[in-house]
Length: 115
Length: 129
Image 1: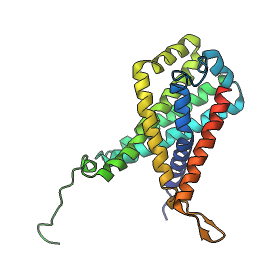
Image 2 (image 1 turned 45 degrees about the vertical axis):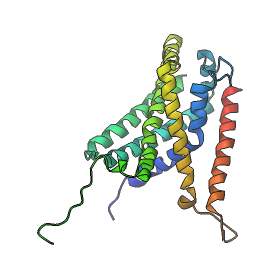
Image 3 (image 1 turned 90 degrees about the horizontal axis):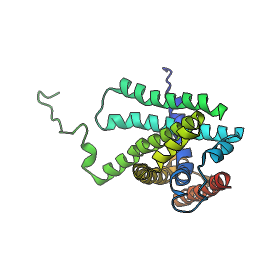
């Protein structure tokens, strides 16, 4: 049987989809709604505070793990959905989707260790 | 093969608008656009954080602008719809048996919603406290 890279992409898709289902709603709540709705202190997202939170290696690892898996999930689904809406240039679409996910991954790898 | 085979007209890009369940399917698939965009917003935030306080606060101001808030509302709706659809298929994706008896699908789905509640409280406590 021909070897295929599908299991890897599919694995990332499933892991990212699951993680996204469990933690994305609370993440959006925290980063966009908690302060204006008065659910959390006003300094929740203040510069010093966020730097302090990300100072812990475990926090860096958690942030990288979640964002990495979720962006690859989204990239893969976007590639498949492009076909559904009639776009047939799959090689180009795949390069774009996975390329953006790869750029986001590399950006986190550059920036996170130094925070 | 006949000389003039019958070909049903199917619109390449608009087929999913023809039935409500196709629209629901596309809403589920489209959730990745909002989810992906939201992750890119956060990754940009991490980048700005590394550039210093002024850059980070400019990023935060955009997140907190009316356009940023509108984006957050739409992203939240699609993220929740993704969660709902993801949990709905779990009985089929991973059927469960206890002592040789099949666990009802509704129990598996409810278990996932309970998991969501626990995960949300945990993340909230870790970030807010």
